[in-house]
Amino acid sequence: MRTVTLNKEGKFLRVIILFALVNSSVFIAIGGSGIPRLIAILLMNLSGLLLLFTFANNLKRFKKANVGLYFKFLFLLLVLWSLFTVFRSFNFQAKRLISLFGHYLMGWAWLTPLAVIFGFNILNWPRLFNFFGKILLAASIVGLFCFFYPILYNFGLLESFAFLPILLLTFFFQSKKIKWVILFSILVYMLITFIVSQRVNVLFLALIIIFTFIQFLTLSEIKPTIKIFSIALLSIASLVVLSKFDAYTNRITQNDELTTDTRTFLFEELFQDLTYSELWLGRGAMGTYYSPHFDYTTQHGLEGDSETRSVNEVGYLEMILKGGYVMMILYILILLPAAFLGIFKSKNIISKMCGYFILAYLIVWGISYYPVYSAEYILLWMAAGTAISGENRRLTNKQVLYKNRNRLYFIK
Image (cartoon, rainbow, N blue to C red; front, side):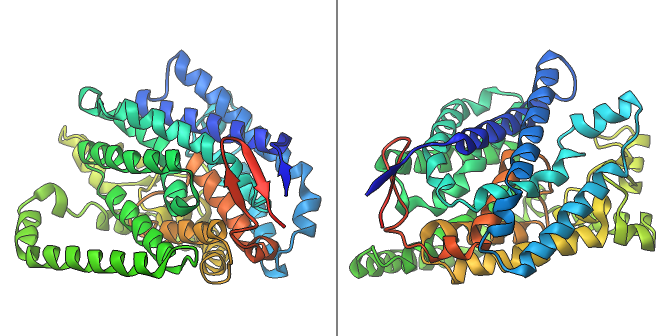
């Protein structure tokens, strides 16, 4: 047994993730002005430049990685298309440059695929678990008082829960302390989600919980009696829920906030405004589209966004707006097979976690969530790197064993 200590790459990765997290949290919480926002912008750019530097400095690893030619070719196309998407919005006007590289929805948002380089080293994940746990614990403690915060502060706080899916999907690989943090964080996450009325968060967490239960059933380390007991318990709970199904349905249908369709018009407006060529190529990182719906709300003094919209809340539509069908197809052609390999062709829980994590985003992108430069998308592409690596997928759980704080033991 030999000890593998944190290296420079691991330290870089922590900084990249932390700075991206600070920027997205501050932007959502306080908006786009003020000294804290300027500091957050600086941190985001340092994070992005460090990501770019690390990727460029490890190109040899990408070439030598045990990854099929299919993924190497498509990833090269994605990087080139992402650069095209960013720099077609580039000019030397100061205001435009600030918008392009000062907003987490714009330039840097399309360069998160570079984080795939970190995923090739599967040991980067367990090195981060305690780091994730500490941030999650701090966010959960702060989140207990969410009733007293403005709604935007709560939205900003939700950014810190980006690590919850990773830790939950590897729940049976974690220490007891982190397991308690995970359970505590789920409760606080749901509380904040209820306060800010984010229905999609409930769907996303439900998918992660379902995938975690599947992980539980497939782990050979867990005794069959425990699995049988868990299935029986779940079956009983399901029967109870089904017996109350009609009552729940009636309550939901009477709640306008839960039944209001806030997505269909996003599809209609985007496809009406973009030309055929723009649908394939997109309008660039700073591309916008016209929204008749929000034009109406503006003219009638109603609450709503600007009629000139720089973002579409549906993930796949945002890809089309900025990078066209080409961007969306490249994302799917890389991430869907990566999810499959991670889930069905892996021998260890971390690679499987990566597959399920990717799959959850592929599903939710159909109704919400969209690419930004944030911790969650850095982790998403890192997961893709882990899942597509044959070397990573061949490792067993006994060969990837996480123990105590920042110490990692690798068993041959």
